[in-house]
Length: 290
Ligand code: NAD
Image (cartoon, rainbow, N blue to C red):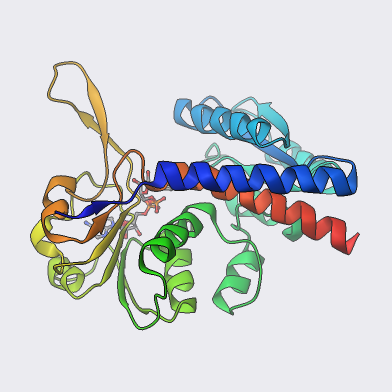
């Protein structure tokens, strides 16, 4: 039976460390680190994420600035708000909750964020820094996955890692992070042929697909470490109820792997904890540079 990787407990520890860092930052600079979160429209899942981010910020002693805009907000008005936040000295990090309404060019909005305030790590500059091995902001979900892997396995050098999914927010930055750790990295995706045998070669599997319980136990190398990023809502056994499952068949993976992250309680809590971590880092950096 594999071990369950407790992301909830790890994230709680990380949030505690950030809160200590925030207190030290306040004592030194006389102000709290500030995170601005921008939500456009009424998407219920996005609204839940934004509320959790706000609560976590406040609990860590940070300032949280919420900007809720109607779904029909013009792109120019959103860009003007980003400019205003870029210039605001109380704001250390800017997060624009995705997805944006269809009439707004997402990349244009992300690119408008000051690179020193890009705590989500989604700008081209941050992606480039990660790809070229320079310091910069790393997207929160893959950063959380890396922390869990390092905690579990220590040195990752030489390990074979398969990442399933090639999105800009999870799969690609995850691949760059594991390459930086000297893993041998394979990125699998929707066009990969014979995915089960590709996955079977991996010491580390990171699944970021969005397909409920796609990765089966017999796809895994015995003793593999499995990080399940997927969040999928499916029908529960009880009629009319739903539940969350990952991209990995958890029960089957527990029979073959050596360690698996559960859904919920694995990667999910790490994402917000890493956002706080990045925001504190942004504040410290801005304070040092002046
Ligand atoms: P995405 O839709 O942008 O990308 C999905 C990727 O999966 C694509 O690159 C695609 O090539 C690949 N894919 C699709 N079907 C496949 C198949 N049959 N075989 C192999 N690969 C396939 O998704 P995303 O934004 O990267 O998110 C992936 C999952 O992670 C979703 O379930 C999302 O909800 C979840 N997620 C969780 C967190 C968190 O905090 N835990 C954060 C971000 C995303």
